[in-house]
Image 1 (cartoon, rainbow, N blue to C red):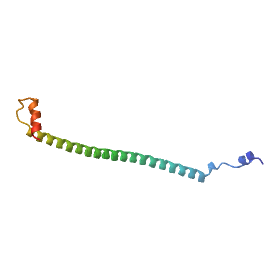
Image 2: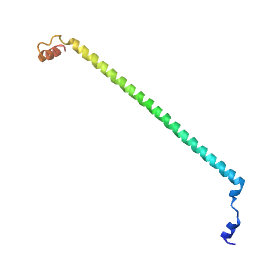
Image 3: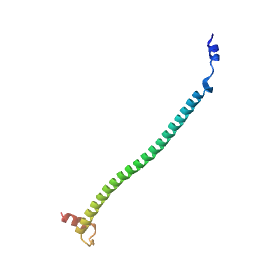
Image 4: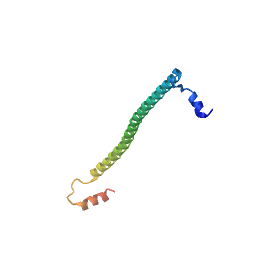
Length: 104
């Protein structure tokens, strides 16, 4: 008996109810697994975007606060220097430079 003859002698088991139920169950399982993977991927992506947005906002807030503090310090320093300058600058720039050197 050859290999072809032995294959022809075997009936394909696709007509069996047991095989049909097993294949159908396997297909349902694969489809459900695929659905869960797609849902988890979508949820993870949205969570990651939200988390990165919050982290970037936090970083920008800290940097902005630091810049604001530096600007406030510089403004106060300029106001202090402006109070030391004479009110009238009628002598021009020379008087301004002279008053700065005299205040030391």
